[in-house]
Length: 385
Ligand code: NAD
Ligand code: MG
Image 1 (cartoon, rainbow, N blue to C red):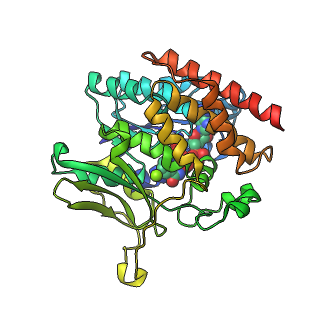
Image 2 (image 1 turned 60 degrees about the vertical axis):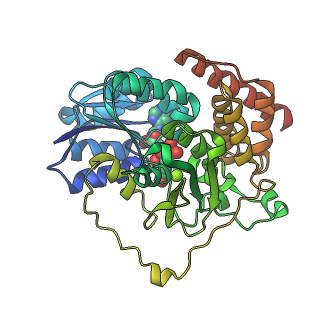
Image 3 (image 1 turned 120 degrees about the vertical axis):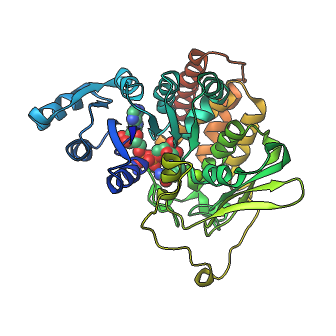
């Protein structure tokens, strides 16, 4: 029996993870749940999975939940302190980190410091503070399993091979809903268009990141820290069918890939059950009916966010945290109708320019860089709109 904490339980990843837990009640027990929104769904999850501890962001939500659950209410905390308590709860073996955005960093670090194994969906944790997180993982001797499908594919493609034999990693990207849009067409796209991903059903923020290809940029940074390879040895190929989830190229020219239908249950289950594989009730991959798998080079002129991410990674220090924070603010502004789609990279560029990368060693430094970059990005948006 593995005892789980699920951070971000009401989101796209959290819900898929709980479907796996529900299918394997003899293997997994949920000890704590956290959510930022969607109280109705959280209430259902509490009734169904009976966690000992729950945390929500807003104290008013905690009060509502206690009232709705009455005598069935577990202990319900709120705020970052509540998230930390859920992540570090005694008896928890593994924490699924599936909060969206840099808000995932502090609870995930708390889980590592408490000695919990981590199933990591929240890529922003590694983007913001990769060196710090990996240092803590090594120091505490915990296991960090990737949930992001590309990183799960690489993790699987590295199994049984020597790290010293790796030449490069090749991350695949679907190209998102605007893969074939011209710059002129990209000017007028709406949040509704951008949220309409061709292959994956995901939360709002990552769906916009997928449309700008910042998602792939964040994943390059995530891969840099997870697999300890420099940016020059991490390539991106556009692969519109999302069947080859990523690849590892070895020194002898061999390329090992992991394939499957695009469903996050596969990488979530592998992170939860490693080294075993759980039977999942998914349609099989039918390559013959697919017919062809295609690959293209990403266009930096139309998808500037990808180059910005490489640039921030090369600069290092606080730069990836600044990139990530500016992106979160810009995506929110785009979703609220304040800015246009093509303003997103412009705002990130301007924010990076106003924050030269500085070396960081402590979590407070990363959190400060994140906070200051958010303020700058908001100022830049307010000044221009
Ligand atoms: P989502 O928006 O569907 O869910 C996010 C969860 O976090 C929700 O439970 C939400 O209530 C909670 N949350 C939001 N803000 C919070 C805050 N400030 N404090 C605490 N909790 C908060 O997002 P998602 O699509 O499930 O993605 C979660 C993470 O997994 C992201 O980092 C994303 O990049 C990554 N990821 C998602 C997918 C996918 O298919 N959805 C694939 C790969 C990686
Ligand atoms: Mg991914």
